[in-house]
Length: 285
Image (cartoon, rainbow, N blue to C red):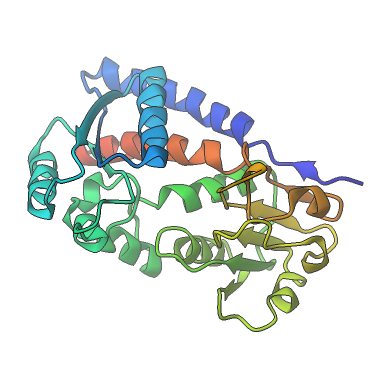
């Protein structure tokens, strides 16, 4: 029997409907949540993400302040722009599109964003808060995965969870969130010996390795929940890190690509804007 599909579009839509109500409440108090997005250079994928946030902000009633900067923008100029947004009392959320052009340090840019306005949850401060369990703004994609799991009724307490991928913005934060939910977590990566030996015992398998169809059916436990975070452009189109057609016949639940984790990420960025607005204004939910 084929796995149950985890419909990221439908779950994201429910979150968006709630955000519309939250934004309306804020506007009734004279507060308009505002997201500033900086896109440096001409990376096509970044352009897609930039415009998706722009459209979604309009749907939710959130003000969008976008700025497209040329590829020859210096690191100093970009950091100065971020500093001005940090100091702007009318901006509650700051998002910088990645990747950045050569010559600009991603680490320096992440560190420059005010943590209280870091709606992608990528600053060292917010990542550090996640590590020690303090309240902060959570990285958007991992947060989105946790929302998918909760909405799908997946029991994480005591479950064996395997995270394939260890990036600072997806793999590591998601592993920490799974741990906070009382799962027993294993992190695998490019130097893991016998990857399949780990993935085959996972009740919940999350994959963010950036390798098309890395996870095959023989690497998945019968009835497992499989969360495919990969997004790879190939000759056959956009595919995930999981061999979807084969794995869906073995898994209990699975996210499609596209239509699974993807719709959640931009939604969570905007959810973080609303959360940041409340915190900056000293409001309770």
